[in-house]
Amino acid sequence: MTPTLIRPPLLKPGDTVAALSLSSGFVTSTMHRYEAGRRQAQAALGWNIIPAPNALRGEEYLYRNPQARADDLHWALESSEVAGILSIIGGDDSVRLLPLIHRSVIQAHPKVFLGFSDSTVTLMQFLRAGVMAFHGPALLTDLAEHGGMHSYAAQGLRQATMSATGFRFQPAPEWTEGGPDWLLPELQELPRTFAPSQGWTWLQGGSPAEGHLMGGCLEVLDMLNGTPGWPEPALWQGAILCFETSEDVPPPAQVGYWLRNFAAQGILQGAAGLVLARPRSYTPDMVQELYGWVKKVLWEAGQGDLPVLANVDFGHTSPQLTLPFGARARLDPATGLAGAGVFEVLEG
Image (cartoon, rainbow, N blue to C red; front, side, top):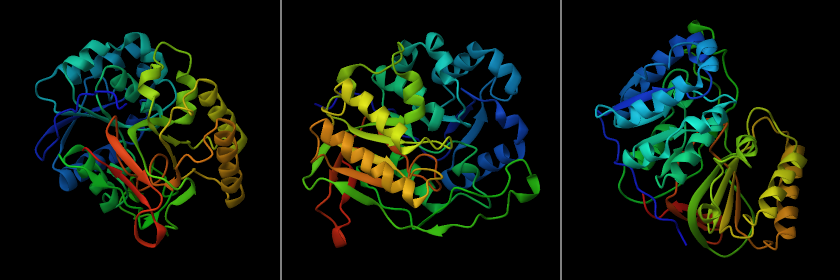
């Protein structure tokens, strides 16, 4: 039941990767961080990052000119010098680009597109064009990590975008969601404080499941829902759904309401599994309430035995994994050391 999607050519050291501002033009307020991200990506991955023609034209210009943002995406896809595409940062209005993005250009020039949060809109358009897409760090987040890229984030990028084989995800040894002010250049080299990770959590399910990876930021999917950019039913069918929440910190009940919408569309009933990101800025009580809502809605949808893996390192957390959307993956709650289970990509 896995849809047939084009796997973009692998990235390799020395490749040129275009940095795009498809939503917010915030980057011009923190150019020291942009340069740190470029420098650290070169050191850790060997990528030569260049800005798209309009990427650094500022917040006001890009807000008023969504066509310029769409032009940058088409330029990066059609340029023979550009091997991959990277989101600089998210925002809240990529949905305005929907009438301007030509899926035929994506299909004709399949390339790695990497981003998260508001980039969910663009990730979905790649999948709708029949091309795999990569839910992972933006330039200003993990690539520009204070004092250098975290080895976990760098390894996640290498295995998802630079390797031809399948691979097994592992929990990060540590994590954080806070840190120094991005606007202060003097703090760029000050390493953040990371807390030891408590690992991942299996909420339910005991049998293994396989399906293609699909999903994104729930707040952005809510904006996309009902628009012409919403993925067709066949793209959802049989998927392992990967959902994250943003710094907006939606209440657990709101997440439950969104999941009920997915159930009303039949998406939950057709899912092979569910992977939930570590929810940003949630208290322990909020986390437990969230998990209660997830299990409740899945029961309502007749999916009380669906394998669900939670507290996973992707989305609005650092360091984060890179998930190859469209790739076939496997969840197995019963396999692995000490009951840790398995989350792996079967085809890279």
